Image (cartoon, rainbow, N blue to C red; front, top):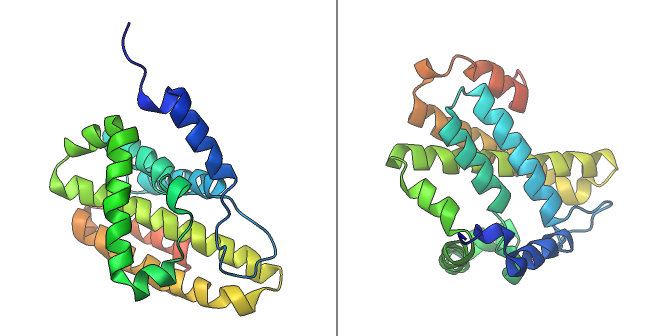
Length: 196
């Protein structure tokens, strides 16, 4: 009998369940809450939509969605460390990256092994699409908060998210080349609006 893939092992399932208890934006006053599990679902869903819009092949799309689902899974142990903290203290971000890589290699090695087979460009593309979807999820959450009247705490996040999304668009454009993206403008307008 073959060993089940790691995500089906009981110890992993119990760890993954904890993602539903971890709240995002724990450093901000917020009107509604979103768990890391909910956020991971949105990131995977947005990743899939972005891959379809960019006409990416099935192997890359599968990897993007897989990595989207696990992109914050190590927060089971580290909790949700706010983006501004990671920006202000890059050494914290470096330590988190080391820990995350170790955690993923221990618990999600199948996904990482598949990813390792991709070319350098395709690995970068996978990371860029997941990052874009992650930022889009953050932006969407901030828009909901602002809609509830919480612009004092989420206006800055919304503006920062839009700036970061523009950077991800440029990275993806460089990786794919604009001529390979027939739906480029439609995707950019869909996400950022027509005036950007």
